[in-house]
Length: 589
Image (cartoon, rainbow, N blue to C red; front, side, top):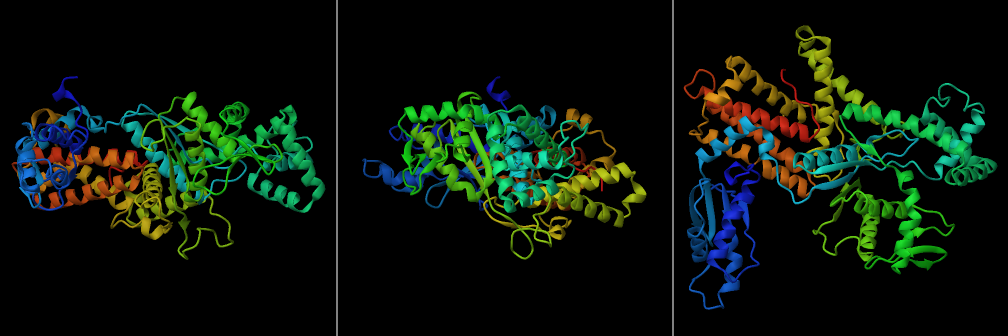
């Protein structure tokens, strides 16, 4: 692909490439200096290069002709190679080089995206394959509000990586192996002796079944002993026990799939049981490297800087989370050839993953530097709280079932649409689909717009508000843009071929520049694993559009064709943001 035919990517990166040339020409001996380019916060320009201040102390004792940071800034500005993207440059304060982008270049790139598609603005990352390990509910337990954040945040990170042309292995590391299965299997045998002959599973409500079996396990010593023996038989591969285990897993899987279908999330299950056969071989590798030591009957790996060891084989010879997680990490690096492995769990598991990653570094599986590849990251997140500031639960202190919560969001959205008389204007199917898009989108956006490390309060009234930074407001804003285009009576596809975008009004230019900053916003959200960065970009895009639409009449003006293309470009970028956030757009309100 010729250079001018390359996709746009990040504006910040494009400018950094120009300033890198300038740095090498201006200061050829300072080879380790990286360009520092940031968005301008004042009115001096669109971007600025901030290298002068940090360069000055390095060069002032070396017989330089420069007399302070402003002179360094002037030299950097003078040596920027010619580029059609730059309209003008100036130096301010202690050597900040301010850059104003060419509005015709901005307009041309918006036009190019409209004809070539939004993939034209995909970020360019250094990796080709990643594993995103997210959702990961426990078999035999219903998905609850605690599983919501991992599922939503993980899906968005996977979508952003996929948009950046990375092959993503979406892994659902379900808890499908462990001591609870002995209890469940034994209770199945006891309660339904003919379970193998039944044409359908006799279990019915798995949650009720789990509670009953747990009650027996806690209060009946004989049952407890039988359950423990059942675990040994299951793990030993006895067919009857494996068949019962598979039946229980299958019931859970069907329940999980209902939630994933609502949320529009796809995953490939590779649960704890998948890695079980690989554990002995991986532990043998770690033992051969001299990493494993005996400690109070268990086998452990000591981690520098952490007082407790990582137990990889329990004192009874059994495996645990650490043995499974180390094995999964080895498998993902060696069998799946992942360059970046991202784990989504609550912040409470941060130390566990820190220990697993440090053990992998000791084994030589990972480079010592955190930002080198192959790379691992634990993406922690805070709790979902109720309005009382405590962990979100139902009135009888049960955790909230995720499927109930999503149904309630859809119901409230539908009620709001009926209140506005949409049941008289739309078909039942349109009403239902719009209620789903708004309800499920509202739940997702309310989570994603927050910094994931913080706790957030779950409040239906706030998330379904059509004003402020909510999915409802943004979905309505997108529908309004679609309505403007429809009312014009113009064919957008024809305009893309015949009309030319111009950005003569300051609000047209501000909207155009913000549209072009889409790629760097996705890249920042992706590389820093912070979906709230993309939410902030989307909300600001909507605000920029509102300002443009208030001050630049679209229909019936000489600039109509150009402004309709700006409307279309805004809608296209909004739809891509919605897609990355896992939200279905709505086209009419």
